[in-house]
Length: 133
Image 1 (cartoon, one colour):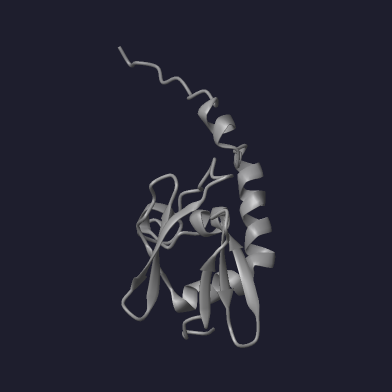
Image 2: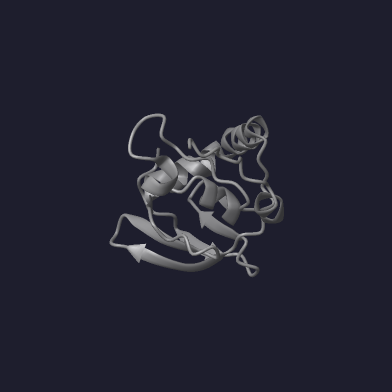
């Protein structure tokens, strides 16, 4: 795994993807992919098995990129999410793992009966809880 920063970091013009250029390859990581695999505790949880499945993130964009020292990027997304620092090693892992990590995410969404579509998530009825009295 590379802990070196990419040689170049660029946003796609539509802000829907992050372009990372390394000496041996160039990767374009969709904003939605970066958002659903955010390294934040809000997404990953605080321990093993506590990750929260991110739903309704299709169409999300990157609104800001800031360096975090010499070791990471802080990415702000159009839904306001801005916690979690993407270390150089984690970005490289996401880039190299896209071919397996993205289909895995889609499978977990399907298994949960959830959607990438934000409108579908907003229209999903909440389960009614019965009052015990």
